[in-house]
Length: 211
Image 1 (cartoon, rainbow, N blue to C red):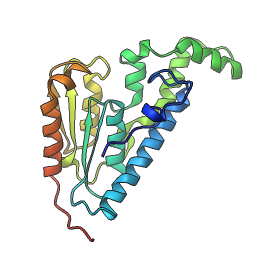
Image 2 (tube, helix red, strand yellow; image 1 turned 180 degrees about the vertical axis):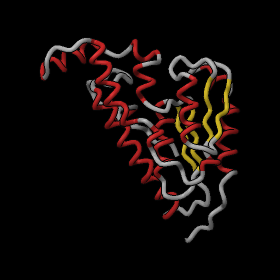
Image 3 (tube, rainbow, N blue to C red; image 1 turned 135 degrees about the horizontal axis):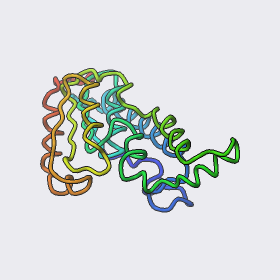
Image 4 (spheres, rainbow, N blue to C red; image 1 turned 30 degrees about the vertical axis):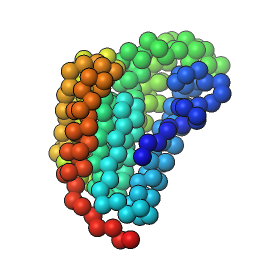
């Protein structure tokens, strides 16, 4: 089952150009909606459809959301965050996306409501807001052995230290590395990502359907 996230595809707002969100608040709303919708789908798969094993997988920002959903789910599920950081702070304030963020526009917007701010102060404000997305602050999943992170060795978006933060926060989880960047690693090593999904599901106990 593939969930089309808010602000993407047919759910993209009319004024939004491509995948570039117009507001910082859109990023938080996107995350909250995606997480709640995914949790509802998992509940349906479990209680209505009677699946004996379940997992959740996401790529990049979707990997952050998958990790959050896996953390919050009340029973063990396979959790597969691929090419994802431990927090949106890393992606937008440290990785290459920091060059695509309209810092001057954010400063101008903030200056309407507050005293004039420097760009460094604006970036610090962004860090504080996006710290809400720090997965290491979330509960450890019910079965950490069914958590497999797949990361890329030369990822310009996601630094190595961010992936290791996740592994440290969730003892028993596993990190697998593939060669390449944020896009090339997924295209060239697709089999490694599929194997991680199968391995994560195989680490779960089969649950008999109540139906």
